[in-house]
Image 1 (spheres, rainbow, N blue to C red):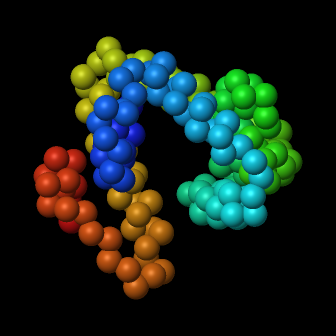
Image 2: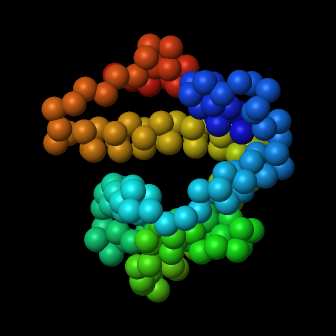
Length: 165
């Protein structure tokens, strides 16, 4: 919730309009989606680009469809709530192979277990934090290595996140 309130701040939304809790955030999200649920070539192109970009993070060709599986998983509740197949609206109708579904199921269960462990163990929390920082650095480096682009992280974030240059 805090992250989206920060995004709202940067795009000029007044703080009075920020959702104050999960339920308000959920209700606001559903209202926005209902208002913007019609198909459009732009939304389909944006979704296709996002899935293509995301598939690069699964280096094994057998798992290139993992972003589609994750998208199915994360939008199911919203689709059910508004009574519209969001994935169809966004032009996502690709077949997900069985092995990707199995791997995705295992991946999501491991994430849930990891999240639960973080709540009860400072050691696990620090270990996870350290691993995720390295992982994100590697993803950004891998993605940008073929481009003549400099990725700038402000010094305050470098020190807050303990990122090594």
